[in-house]
Image 1 (cartoon, protein in one colour):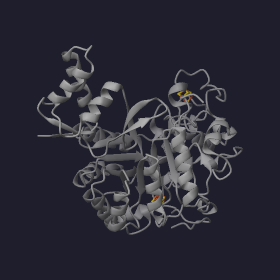
Image 2 (cartoon, chains in turn purple, brown):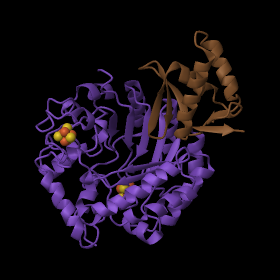
Image 3 (tube, protein in one colour):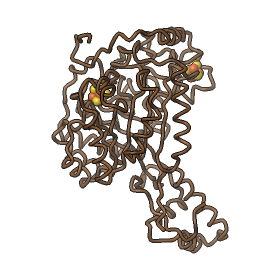
Image 4 (cartoon, protein in one colour):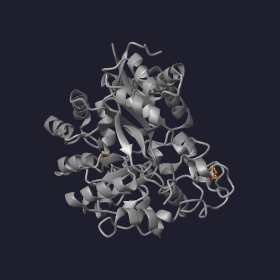
Length: 365
Length: 93
Ligand code: SF4
Ligand code: SF4
């Protein structure tokens, strides 16, 4: 297979279990249906097979990856395969001792997420009292000599706090700050009415972040990810379907993106049944949206099709019930009215509370 | 501007590895990577904090004898600037 389709990054979703209940969690809404089906040996084989395929970056994520008792062995195996290994954690439950062990086993980077800049608002979004503990973990990360990525998912309740978030990241000496606007899949779509910001809120935040980006250049990388609900064209979701990223879910499904198993009609194969290389190359699900043969108009004849690949398949499906539609986030999409309606709703969205990530059927708070 | 007598050192978050697929060296850091051409790979390998920029230019001029020294110096400076801009380099005094 040509270099056009070479995975550089493996996203290893080690478990969907998590002590938190974030209202924008991108895990499947039916996450309890997926159990931790891969044992230590399975994961280590997946890491080696991924490296053979060309992967150089590994994200150990979840759910909450530190809930796995074998994370030490996984970090060690990842480094043995010479993968640049990044632990993506909420910081709960993580001790300084365990972090130090990860350090000595060669873990390269730690990403800690916080929800906001103060305990009450942050904890409200996480659904648990964890803010102070998260800051503690972030400080340990730096004390132990790791690079620190601080990740904050943005939405209407915290978009006004970007200046304070930057200051907090500086105080923590973060090496990278990800200001990622909520992507409306998983629990975030359930909560879209209360999360989606207005254009004005977004503009303010974008300006603050651009200034921080310029001021901190060379010291801290400041990344602001626009929500595509407010962009003229969609993002190149995952850099294109099954092109640069490979995701393996807790139960062992190989996926082109972490939300792909919400798409009907695609059969995703399990890494326990087939080598990763064969899945990457031959699996009909991986080939379903490669290239441009599958594209409808207006994508098919659009000059941006090699730039954004028609946008996000999951978003297309979630909003139009057709996974092969042009992403409605695109202003050229015939379904763009759905996005405009959501923006309109954001102007007047009443705060009627979140629905927390919970085993379904969920209870309204 | 990077001083000729400074001693550049890769930031702790950056790691060099060989890529079998492209037969190039990669400079990996969180979420990203730079593909290094042979000259850049040589420069990066010398960014250990022991060598001054001056020494790095010397070493590369020896190795790439067909290239004028001024050109090599420009290449070194440009690559170090790229690293600095991405926070991938420290300069020890
Ligand atoms: S988004 Fe929140 S609830 Fe979901 S896995 Fe991450 S920390 Fe857990
Ligand atoms: S029409 Fe399709 S290819 Fe063109 S910008 Fe919109 S999503 Fe991208």
